[in-house]
Amino acid sequence: MNRSIAITLREALGEAKVLTDPATLGARRHDYWMLSHVQDHLGAPGPSAACVVHPATVVDVQTTLRLASQTGTAVIPFGLGSGVVGGVVAAPDAILLDMGAMNAVRSIDPVNLLASFDAGKNGLEAEQVVAEQGLTIGHWPQSIAVSSVGGWVATRASGQFSSAYGNIEDIVHSIEAVLPDGELVTLGKGPRASSGPDLRQLMLGSEGTLGVITGVTLSLLRAAETRTVSAFEAPDMTTGFAFQREVIQTGWRPPVVRQYDERESLRLDGRAKACLILMVHEGPAALVAAETVAVAVIAERMGVAAAPSDIVEHWLGHRNTVPSWDVFLKRGIVLDTVEVSADWSRIGLIYDDAVASLKEIPGCLAGSAHSSHVYRSGLNLYFTFAVQTSDPSEMEGAYLDGWRRIMEATDRHGGSLSHHHGIGRVRRGWLERELGGGALAMLRKVKAALDPKGIMNPGVLIPDA
Ligand SMILES: Cc1cc2nc3c(=O)[nH]c(=O)nc-3n(C[C@H](O)[C@H](O)[C@H](O)COP(=O)(O)OP(=O)(O)OC[C@H]3O[C@@H](n4cnc5c(N)ncnc54)[C@H](O)[C@@H]3O)c2cc1C
Image (cartoon, rainbow, N blue to C red; front, side, top):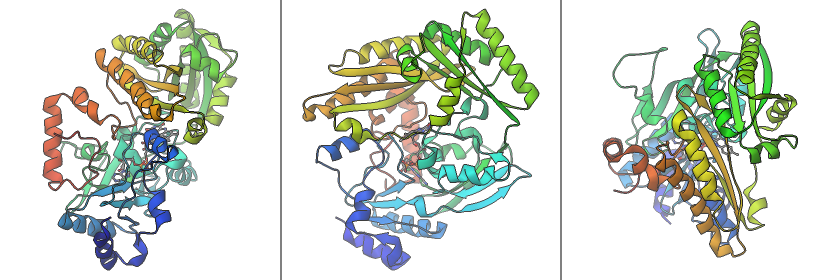
């Protein structure tokens, strides 16, 4: 363990901000990635970091990165640890930079609909504080109560209401970040700019590999005047996709549009006979009324039946549950959710191929999907797989096999390999297939320019050359 970096950091930041006690180190070994939990379950936990740093100010972050650069020490940024792709896995020589204590509300500006937060601010707390003023961020990842606004930016997150309000890249106004050499930058100004490439995009999805996000200004919405819900049942996934495409391409924008395959529909609502489609409509009352009627008319025209809408209310009430992996691991079950996206012409092929492939895994208990984010040119699929093994030594292999099958099916049909969880470690080997060799080389050049010593979150996002 690299104790000397802890001593150096204590001298610079003070004793209280640099922790090396076993409890703190142990609690910050990894994020929510299933494979790290499998290792814990099997009694072979991964290592702890050399120390956990709790910066209180931007200057603390700058000091930490300057010292890390000078000493060539790896830095692993940690938001609230809800990442599911292995973006946080501690290493014995590394500094674990826990942003959770930098959690202030910096400002709320109801005139310009902007709110600024420290990067470690809990997402739900950020939403609640703007809601007190009749405003909303409109970003509702299922993990809202256990993720940070900085983590949202670092992973390019998506919320459940994205179909109208956008993903995090549409909501971010500006980003304050510390680069690996300690320099502080603010990226983004004004509602729009034509001032060269949009450098905010370098931080969006950077997964801690290009710098540390210290502050985020988000663009807000006024809380919707009205909300209503509707539910439909399509005879099959293909008909449901066609219905969604018609709704979106004719210009309607329900913030929530979710389509479940037969298996997931039944799990959601025991009355379901085929593929449920859930919608939430929000906005000015007149618009919501018009949209609700228009969507129902399109459904009827396309052979999609109306379904009892109480299921949407049920989903709204239960949508932010965070499951515990341990319940499954104790029964020898490995599982995960894997999100991809594709255009309308390919999405059905990916669904059929991936689900068929998952069912071939020995011990497969579930291989299913729903869509939850829709665009003019296509939509995402959110696969769930679960595999039961009687031999604990097979858990890791079974888990990686599930991932491989979804990645291969998506790649085979030209889909995008990650919709919103990011790359982390689990998808790193697939990044060249996703980006292409030229674009990956470009990303490596950006990384080398900003982080020449490679101190920022090694092992994540960018595959070794
Ligand atoms: C039950 C559950 C449901 C989820 N639902 C969704 C969902 O609906 N939509 C969605 O998009 N995601 C979802 N996720 C994934 C996860 O919540 C998001 O990726 C979230 O944005 C991570 O935020 P965090 O603060 O927990 O980041 P962490 O897990 O702490 O870190 C994630 C990555 O970002 C980096 N990072 C974190 N903070 C910073 C920072 N300040 N500066 C630089 N790098 C940083 C880390 O190094 C790591 O690589 C879900 C996860 C769970 C467990």
